[in-house]
Amino acid sequence: MQSKTYTLFAKTLIFESITMKIGEKIRKIREMKGISQEYLATQMEITPQAYGKIEREETKLDFNRLEVIAKLLQVDPLDIVNFDESQVFNNTFNNHSPHQKNFILHNQEQMGPLIEKTLSVLQDEIQHLRHSNEILMQYIEKLRNR
Image (cartoon, rainbow, N blue to C red; front, side):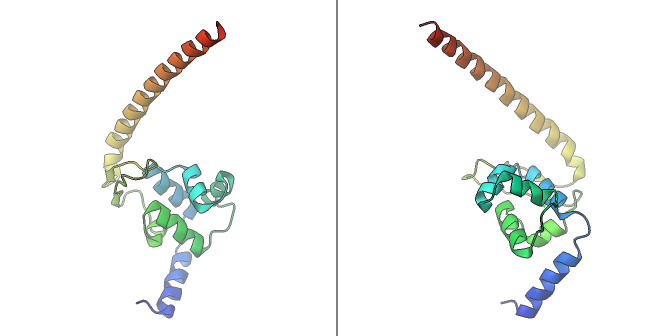
């Protein structure tokens, strides 16, 4: 079990090391994991606008809130503080959450193929949604003509 002194030291160390924008680090981790601001806001019981202020650093981020965000992102608070895009970053897939994507990013060089794959999946989804929209529009037109 950790001592209170160690915990206080760790909390102090975390906030002393936050020179790069913590909100930007949170945003990048959230985006890499495929989690929306709306989802995190809902889980934190705040509005999406209030959550957006956290990422834009327009509101104070205390250690307790950082712990909550870290838990929702399934990372350690220190991982957020020390986050660097070129570091190894693992995201484990949670079958019970539709808000997460399944991928492992080992280094920055793998981002290109990952982005291409993500783009391809999104393009397929757009085509599917356009087709669904077309069918719905035809159905609406039939209902109007009754």
